[in-house]
Length: 302
Image (tube, rainbow, N blue to C red; front, side, top):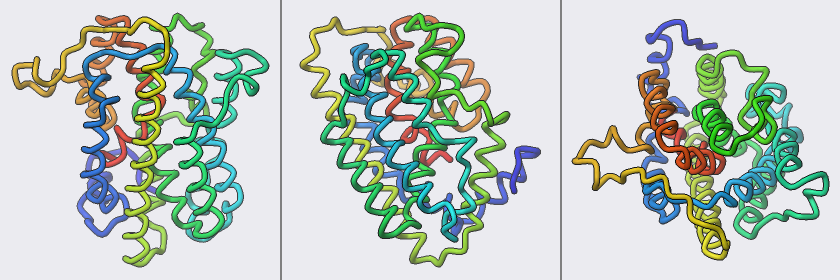
């Protein structure tokens, strides 16, 4: 298992283009850029979001993770997935259920439902879990590694912005109590994934499935955008600059800062946190965005 003990240990994997993690990075770059250019993301970069979308994003995540973890449990002994079975460390659906109970109350299930776009995503996860379990690798990697990459920063941002209890209610999705070092765990996960005995054709199929996962996420973002148009709620405007207002300095872009944070840059994590503190409402949009996009923002950067 790779650890974070030195930069060279991580480079051992980064220098092998045939490694699954490297193939996924290269193969999803284009669709990642497409995701960045959805209207939902553009609005995010302008610092405009509706608070209610934070809760709706959590609902979408609950149904997505419930499906994913049902199929993981079904295939936990499968030779092409068993090495990636970390239920205690990673599984999120129970934490999301507690978050939804906090936001909607004890009867939260009667107040929420699986949206059309989310159902399409859920159906695909169940399909691959039952018919072609190796493809679960792409879905699990997309979601969990993104959660670990950005979730811890955004937990604090959302807690402050939404005035949530310091004890963590409403934000358990972001809390991985069984993981002491997210960076080391991510390296372990990538090493386990790269060591799976897969032929090149199967690796290519996994890249294709990861692209599909991006497309499903984009559909969810577009759906949330449409729902947001119907919500009678003041737009939360953080006044954060977009690329064109930055004098060409992309490092000032909040999305770029988030991506640099996912890659382990301590300085950028600090920048992200400080930027959020300077823009209180921006804390909400960062939390809302990452509740749905943690996987996207980190996927090919892993």
